[in-house]
View 1 (cartoon, rainbow, N blue to C red):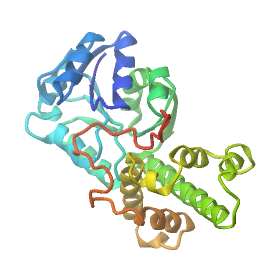
View 2 (cartoon, rainbow, N blue to C red; view 1 turned 90 degrees about the vertical axis):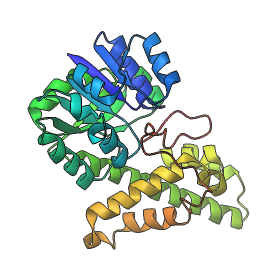
View 3 (tube, rainbow, N blue to C red; view 1 turned 180 degrees about the vertical axis):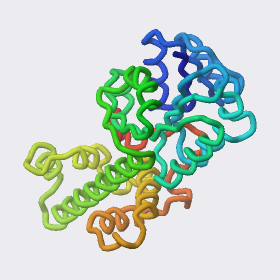
Length: 295
């Protein structure tokens, strides 16, 4: 089995490195020369183009920021599909909308390439330790071919029925996190307005309402700091994708309303929060100060 990987950011780099350290022949493609050089030092072959990577691999992981980035490296000039042999399998670890991954899968199927819907949850440390959660959807034969490679960095694989359902599960997870952070922020606001003080952070860390959302907010310390983080960009993107996927039928959902109202208070795209090139590796989306965990 020959494995490939594109998207060597905070999340993708340790994933690819674990494949190589597992004794599987690994080829990477990276836009940045420094990333490619580092990958060659830990045993990966380096392809000059995504098409060259496609020609060298049977199963390829993609971990870039969004659907446009996925489509560019797969179907753009000298893209993966141009070089990959029929029967190849591509696992898309990026978080995109169900419709987008379905469209990508349909396009790849025209070239007899199978797309697996495979967003991840965990973070760089989990990837380094081989303990990521991988949400995996797609045809069983292709999934069985990819699982030995995915298992290099996954501690758990949650199977879903068809392409698109794993992405929907990931978007629901991230929307729930956004809503939880919104509730924590409001509780902190109420406490501060009524003289409770910063001790409320400690209560939320160990009390009955403890959660990852409260740990995350405590690490950032304020809405203002949170607004300047990559968390804002990723949550805004994912809540919008979920809203688009579910449509108006669920417009009154408490989950959606809370998540939407929370993300709308940040002016994403104004320059006040970070933005990424779409072909950049998927960011360490919710990495807080001193944290290596992400959803």
